[in-house]
Image (cartoon, rainbow, N blue to C red; front, side, top):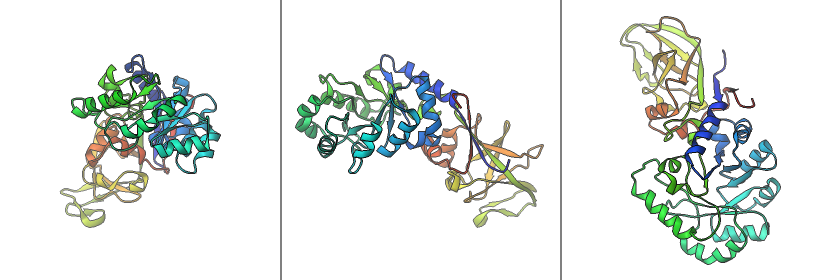
Length: 348
């Protein structure tokens, strides 16, 4: 195998969606498909989620939404977290997107550019990232509610920490701004779903949990990344590997050079910390992760591998992320375009 292979299990993604839908109770589970379905390929993954029953999809910005519309066709609702940005009217209108308006300026822009077009409203309940502040909402609420928003939403800052006081504070703030409106509401992504029914409202927005990441501990593994072995060399004790001579062999060693590196999203911070797997046997990375390659100590393997797995059943995205001092989201969304992508299950 000359090319690294990223295998994506569509059946695992849809199992995760069904599980998070069940945990959402009476709320309808949508699906967050921004950033090319967290790097896994929106053109293939989003239709699999739609076939599983998802009818509401969430993206970061309008051009992502247009791509999802092309993949799904007419029917499913596609919400845009960034709202209605300047210059986006034609994309929003042509693709039938629903911008989640974040400010009085966006409300005015949307009303002027696309009168009568569907919209939602996003509220800042304490994260200070996106959304209407309480004072802004009071200024436009009567007019905006009369126009019939499709959804009212906010986003939790600390949902991955169930005991964090911020969760209850944001819940109270969201209720204060939206109780009595009679409009469908959404507060919870994956972490919020796991906080329980008080956080579910009408629509939930599972994201990272669909793709096998924390905090959904029961998620089915979704990805396997197999890296090709370009060369194996024998080195004596005392020789070094890679840029900067950062690793020195303490014994005669066999060093495999793998054909992937930080240009493929395998970040340099993995240097000296991460490992790859040959079946059930872990093998440590040695030397610095380079742009297109990395070194691995395979001295203790009984055979000569053609590939080694950096993601798979023994090491998921969160385990690898922890070794690199980051989060599973970054590992997934950084996966590069030089991989041969193989989809299993679903409609593929």
